[in-house]
Length: 144
Image (cartoon, rainbow, N blue to C red; front, side, top):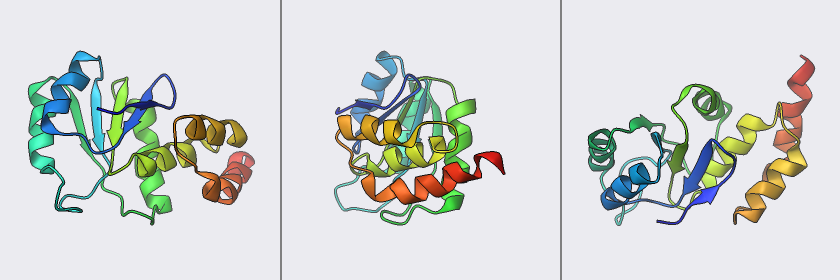
């Protein structure tokens, strides 16, 4: 399992398998979040099987599918509260981890330094530079 720690509360990963769930639980993750729609790819494990494995391993399960290349403001609005309310640490996954990283960065843009968010993602292998302008617009709403 390939893990990319974005902060103390959130780690992201490319697609995990049912067998990876037990490993994630042993590593101390308390919540498992899937940002990948079911049946997005032929090689993708069944979401229901991963959800069942999460529950069997004592993890909270959250299914928040996001369309690749089309993260909406509504997607961000649904993801952001997870960072505050879900049991931590959280492991989120999608096909490559990019959607999860983007959701994290967009969710944090209002309160965190944007360049630092982008640098953190880049250091973990995710170039989110294309999201910078959107993040700046979100940050501009800090005082609204």
